[in-house]
Length: 148
Image 1: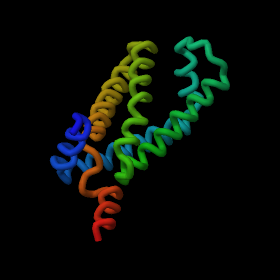
Image 2 (image 1 turned 45 degrees about the vertical axis):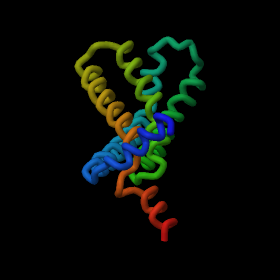
Image 3 (image 1 turned 135 degrees about the vertical axis):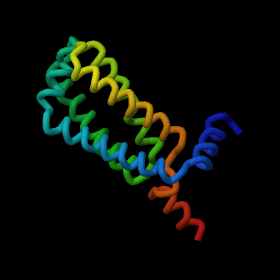
């Protein structure tokens, strides 16, 4: 049995129900951020263009749309507990990019507040990447349905 499989089994056996409440809140927060990015797409594109990535405006628009879609779908999947590990894995590169972007963009009080929020969300995503869905999830419901 390899290390990842043992880690997955440990996470499944040590997952308590209060962590599911945290998982649902995390998914709702990520969905909220996706909606916020969608409503303020010009701000997101301005932040992305300030990094001097030498990309065209169409590439930045595609990147912004990708971030919004991944946040909305990934947050929804985390919230309901469907393919939670895959949803967490899809969110992690975006949050690492956000940390780098916030570090490069400036040192205002708003940037430091966003940095703390981003680091906390990244830590929770890593936790649920290891721990998995939990007892109150659609994946668990499907497994119990197959046993019957």
